[in-house]
Image (tube, rainbow, N blue to C red; front, side, top):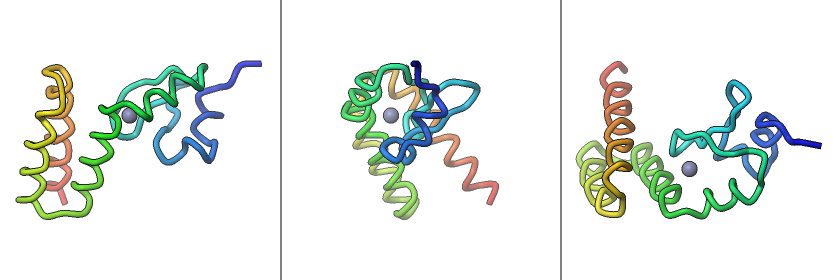
Length: 102
Ligand SMILES: [Zn+2]
């Protein structure tokens, strides 16, 4: 029996970090689709450096001042590859726009 993305997303183990949309499982922090059929894929993603970094950034963004945020973003850049930096730019821009709209 196959497990749906929705089933994965509502499990207590994953609901904090993942959500289901359009039959796909997304990581809340990295904003990417994860293969929900294989638990090992989800678990591997959760333990990846990239995922940990994004969680760290989200936590910092939601708890600290604008000035500290920028410093944190810059220090995290060093941990990421070039393509991941582009994703991060989008993430940061999105946050900035949300802040401006408030
Ligand atoms: Zn992730």
